[in-house]
Length: 77
Image 1 (tube, one colour):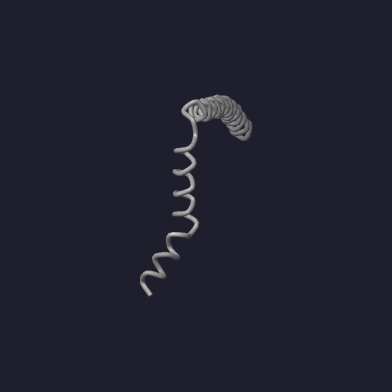
Image 2 (cartoon, rainbow, N blue to C red):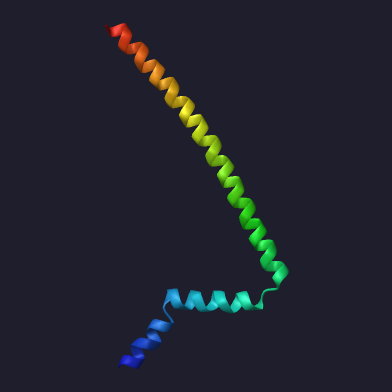
C-alpha cells in the first residue's frame, strides 16, 4: 500500500515537473542556457523600468491630488 502511494506521489504534477525540467536542462547547450538567461535579464530590466515610470506618474498624481484637496479645504473655510 505504501509503495503504491509513493509511486502515485512521484508522478504527481510537482515532482514530474521537477524531473522533466532537470532532465531537459541537462540536455540543453550552455549557449542556449546563456541566451535564455540573457532574455530573462532583459525582461526583468524592462519590467523594472516600467515600474519606475509607473511609480513616478503615481507620485505625481498623488501630489496633484493633495494640492487639489488642500485647495478645496481652503475654499470651504
